Image: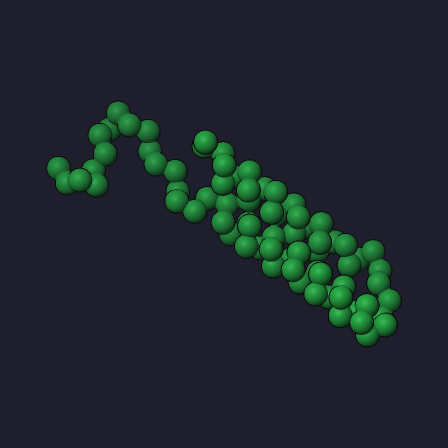
Length: 73
C-alpha cells in the first residue's frame, strides 16, 4: 500500500480546482465588458443595454464559480 492510496471507508476527495473555469470565464467577461465600455466612452460611441449582457453573465459565472469553490467547506 503506497502513501497515496486511501482506505475504502473514506469518502472520495473532491476535485482540486472546482469552480476555477467559471471564475476565469467570469473575470474575462467582466473585464472585457469594462474595457469595451471605457473604450467606447473615450471614442464617443453610444452604449446600448446589450453591453450589460456579458457583464451580467460574467457576474453570474463569478458567483457560481465562487459558490462551487466553497461547496465542501
